Image 1 (cartoon, rainbow, N blue to C red):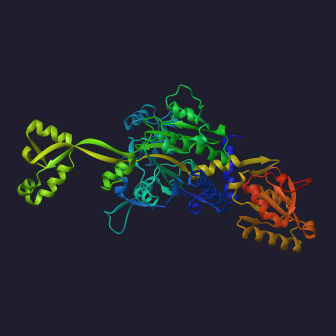
Image 2 (spheres, rainbow, N blue to C red):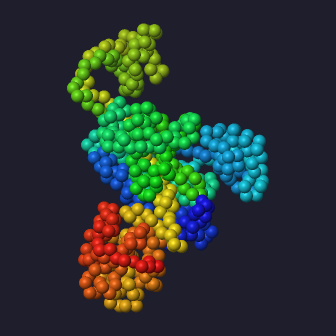
Length: 586
């Protein structure tokens, strides 16, 4: 099926069956915003819970989850670099005034990559190749930079600027000290978060692929940069996992397979923790229905990486309409973030690492004649003493040798009032700024990928063959004959029991049984329980598998237990009951 055809079928089904659709439809819609309907919400919730299982719950000894505000004060995003660096190139049509992503226009018209091009280079390409407004055909102006942060004010004062978070990371960096102390000051530690973010995209034109408001699933994993093995104590569990990787600058246009351990040893992946979470990401995407050969990791070049990253891999998944799309980013952020927040806040965000046993070290120490400083500088003496104590002893020693005096804060201090000596002291440990490895997922893209890979057609019918544990509804309960009150009452009893036992279930007694099966297949419901006349006699019901259309007969009283085994333990239908001969399913 052609990519555009499949996409149109997916969107039609998603709207009709209550999964997702463009927001504000009754007002004509607003680009970059999507609603999740009743079943889309449930699908998204299950995908988030599965992500939590892979990244948080399965690593609960090291990873915890928090929630932080959507809006942050300006200083947070000044420290993070977003105020200066979170930009995209924008170009305006001189004739109609519409604005477009300059790099996207260049890529669409010239079929080249525009990543890493400067503003001047993009302007030159647009002029040289005569690229015009795709709407009215008018000439385009100069390329400029546009900051993607949504700006607001905190409280009634215009000077108190805030921003809607463009990512979840800063909330976790700012909370690091509190979380670290609450978790008994142990390293390594991962801080995870799931939440909404906003990016004021210039011209989002790829449906759910590029939104202005969306959900991120993200984790910041804090490590000791001098202890790569200790930072990733679970690495051995996945060291043989095969990853498809396209290295930056590789002459091979196709991704190559590497075992995780080999990729780290060969420095294809710079840090074992970065590689480990990539392997977890691969398993996560497979678990929601994406085949291994439909995903790979693409290493970004220096000009393509975010300002904070030492190495970045994008996890790419193939979809019908847009080809390869990024669903997650994996970055080694070094100590950039905590260092910046230390600088801007003045708060110590280092951690202390104890040595196995104390060591004796010799170091230089500045000795100051406090009496002289007090007599000479009077009320300014504390400020001068503080400035001296912040100086490097080696630099002070060099200055005294060279000039016979020391100049601090514009004040001259003679060599007689300050000297540098060498002392021995026992050191029990050292302080360091943790480095960070970050896996970050765009949830809405993951949902779309899961939807597309679940979309099947069989005998003229549509089936959403979601993996059982992410299906929005887990079962449908059907009375065989919609007009028989005794069957309907019995079906209602089973429906209520399944709901009480915690399942998301729907009851359907409208139309022929075949039509109801088809409806449940379109919703991706893994199991259909049918109450028929034999149920009234012996208390058994039929259980139908969405994917095979096969049926077995099971005790009605055991429906919840059997459903749980089928959904969560992936037990095959044939193991759960007595096979039923089905002559016609629709």
